[in-house]
Length: 525
Image (cartoon, rainbow, N blue to C red):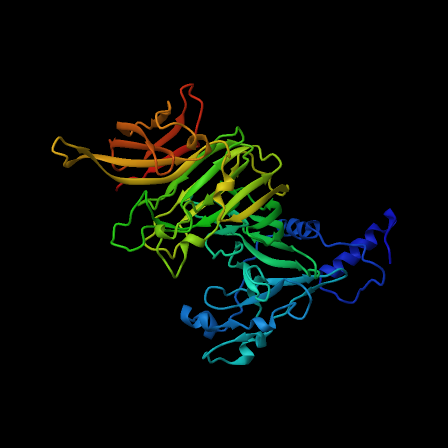
């Protein structure tokens, strides 16, 4: 049956409704003329936004809801029973079992050329290890999330390249990478006294890929007390994974802060904030800094901190060209961790599509005592938020990469590292005497510097807020990097308050030679 005329619109809508309900009764003999799209999910999101929020309820029996992490780890999906395992497609799916705080199921559907059907829970796809439970207690369960498998590293091995589990969090890796930071669908009122709201993906639709397909299309329905949303993800595996994201968000009620394209990461300690305890790892973090490419062409680098108090930094930008949380510095010697391989964790770069207008890139840094907490959040907060019930459409490309050099201005220079120590002065007897200042050493490298003579007229533009006095601002050639090293010594006036500072390299005409280094020295108390 082929739909051609306008008069068939209502009939088409009825057919689509049946398909969305999971009906398999309809099939088309001829080539399919309908297509599942983000509009179908957006229709659900709009209807959902018009209804009162209904919180998800757990259907877990006590032996699963009360289990410890070690027990949950025993539940292993049998990859030989992966979904699409017998189809000639490079993509396969595996699933997460419900358990612990993953106590509510998400609906997962498969989209084919002619149907939409639910992917039903199957207990036989799991190895439960030594766990003992009543099998009848699991018969009505669902899946807590899913993984995407693809032969990214070896042609004969299915590797996990993406995972969707818990709220609206998802993670992706490219070739040779290991999981690090996460992305989210939406952030609401992050770091506000009223408390953060965590939207969750309650339902997914995954297109069955063809044998020759190099991409996987995933749709998702997002829901929370004050927002709903429809999402379309197009995942393209490779050396770097690329994910195109299209979203349509509806507000149920007003929000104070709407975070688009949010990223969540972890920073415990690093060169700019060494560990207070002896640790063989020089650095321990999923990301080392926030990078922004502003609409006016400026590049900015903000090293991350693990502050003693909640810290929120905002960067006003109009039509951002990109922003992301990066893991700068890939040398294993920076981390020395053979188990967790922080040197192989990807950076995540948001490349907006179209004009996003005025707004702020916000960075939230939360104190954490260990590496188990994601204490770093970055997102775009638009200046103008949508009216309740009105759609907000936006799109971006999300890069998961270890090639940070491709995310720089190719004609400029950038910060290689930021190092922090107590400030001191070398006396006539060559003994260093601490002077109560804080020293920050910033190394710049890049094409704009490497061909300059060591005595080239390179100078600095440095500024701080009123809570600091600059007692040293010195610049010297760094022959190791063929770049320049900036040394700042500052005296903090009120240690209970943070210090904001900026620096950049310029030539004799005051033309920028580097990105802008933006740094916050956290409060000590």
